[in-house]
Amino acid sequence: MSAIAEAFARTRQQGRGGFIPYITAGDPDLAATYEIMLALGRAGATVIELGFPFSDPMADGPVIQRACARALAAVGEQKRLTVADALAVAREATRKIDAPVVLFSYVNPVLQYGFERLIAAAKESGISGLLLTDLPADNAARLAGFARGYGVDLITLAAPTCSDERLKTICAHASGFIYAVSRTGVTGTRAQLGGEARTLVERLRRCTSLPVALGFGVSNREQAREVLTFADAVVVGSAIVQLIETNLGRPRRELAAQVEALARELAGNGHAETKAAAISYLVKETH
Image (cartoon, rainbow, N blue to C red):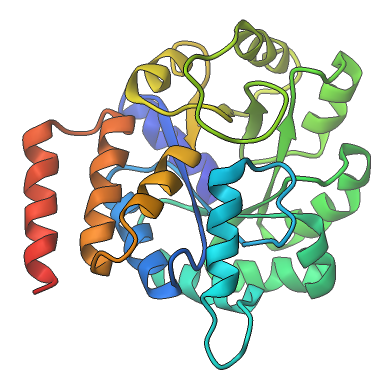
């Protein structure tokens, strides 16, 4: 059983739905990314998605686009943030958290690095899964084979516009979980979820026994609860990244505490008093 499968099994045993937060590596810097990953682990994340910043994040809305731009601009002497940097911060964080980490990227940076080289390096760095947003389902077989060889799950995306035949192809090469996209378009918070999200999850259930996580548009606890009435997990990205953007300039641990508070709220893990105590403790640690 993979680390991701074990994480979902634990979540089911605890009688709760899964919570999968997304953050962009290097936003606002790699040291902050490390602290935020630890905070998400404390908040009860089932899986953490660590996005590698890309210069053309075509599936992402303005919030994550700006996060990618910040991460790519926050450079040191090396002049650019590298895949190796993201893997290094994941390696350090996974030593201290139970939640498995999925590396979220686009195909181009992976092609530059090399498919098999990346999967081998990801495994060595404690990465449990790989999700390539723009990987065509028809071309996933070869990468899925590499991933299986290294014990890394290949997470695939499914959209409401997919035909039943395409959903079967998507599910055939997937492992870990299926990422169901709640609607067409790009990532970003939305006032409400559409009915097509529930329908997509029902269609996927007929194709796979893997857990189905729903994302794209979830921005508050009420929406997260709604998702968990029909999906195995909820994915939240833009709402968390927006909070990071709002708190730029704060000390790293204080920023991480703010993220932890939001993550606990979204995951339904703890009350306001608990969240306030966590923030107070971590703020004290920064001084």
